[in-house]
Amino acid sequence: MKSYFLVLFLTVFSCSKKAESISNSEMQPSEIQKNIVYGKELILNTSKYFGPNGSISQHSNGMNCTNCHLDAGTRDFGNNYKAVFANYPKFRARSGKIESLEKRINDCFQRSLNGEALPKNSPELLAMMVYINSVGQNVPKNTTPKTSGITKLKLLTRAADPEKGSIVYNQQCMQCHGNNGQGVLSPNKTGDYFIYPPLWGKNSYNTSAGLNRIKNLSGFIYENMPYNLASHNKPILTQEEAWDVAAYIISKTRPEKFFKEDWPNLKTKPIDYAFGPFADSFTEKQHKYGPFQAMDDFRKKNN
Image 1 (spheres, rainbow, N blue to C red):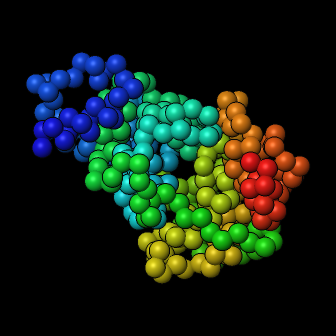
Image 2 (cartoon, helix red, strand yellow):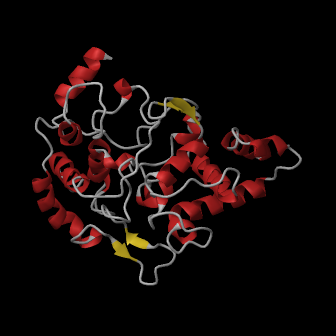
Image 3 (tube, rainbow, N blue to C red):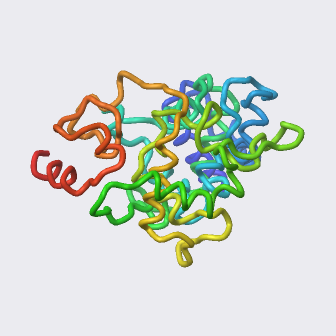
């Protein structure tokens, strides 16, 4: 047991100088378990520690990691962490580099939480890495469970329609996320700052977040929304409705943040990333809403 925990810990912190100081004699399973518990707490109640009233610092938007990684990153088809331990460090086209888990977590803080990166070697960053890796500890290396990540829906033959999506939103989403998409605040504004997260506006994820891409958002919605009613085997929305309500959500304003180092190879930029420049002649509007089949065909032919 002790050797497993040591491997887990060293893998998590393989890119950190702190790992160099850890030895078999210094590492105890109880320390790893403590980090797992603390890491899960940080995933569930991120805002308690880093939100507008955070007890550690105040540099994120009030959302929690579990808003996008459901059930603390354990729910099947809920953007879970099950493939992380098996695949990180990994090459990511967005940066054009091999990325550590440390880098990936801080990307989420800067994009989905519209905040700032955590300091390297901070106890919180360590705990989150240990917890996230523990979720997929039994997944064989270099494999990806079918239940992980976000489902990619079948492409529509038309552009996704924000106006049709507004109807779906009013029927299925408004009761939790509000008529203005601003979510529902916890009454005392502590702990779980947003009971239901904002989908647009100043407290939502910014323009560079993964869920600001319609293919990601539509798949996430289809498998999981309305929350705790829909599931992989019993979706509530049709795929077409999921595309349209995703279009409605991404049509709304949100914090703008861009990273000049993103997509150094334009040919690898996702077809639903709606901000130029592009390696094709399709418009930003088509990259945002589709239809995507022509873009997909062009990509396959020219890459």
